[in-house]
Length: 134
Image 1 (cartoon, rainbow, N blue to C red):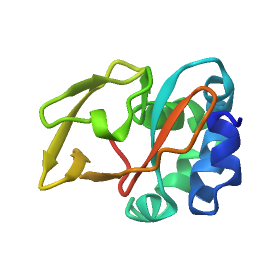
Image 2 (image 1 turned 90 degrees about the vertical axis):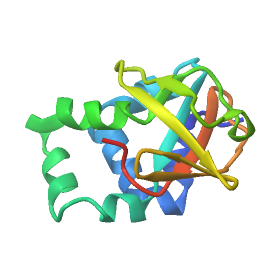
Image 3 (image 1 turned 30 degrees about the vertical axis):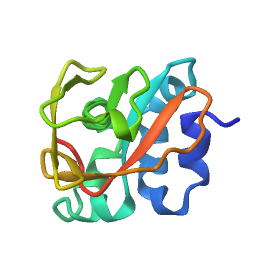
């Protein structure tokens, strides 16, 4: 069974995330025991950021800013999609609080709609996010 980093590396919808996870050195955390819940921004999510922002964040001198942004998507523990309930407050690995909203079966965190994707992963679970959580 693969870990989160291996799943991100293999997913064709997560090419930008793959590059940013490695550029920020978060591949080490996402390969560790966990478990983690990762709200993984798709390539389309990164395209919604202002032009050139992700490229700038991937420059070596901005590694800590990139890691901070990506840490907004990682919660300790394994939370399945069906367990994301309206009003839930999740705390990310960097201490940011995420508010889960659920309306008519659609789950969102901030401006990001969370899509169910319950891949079997050895150290957690990945859900797709259609926007970057800032």
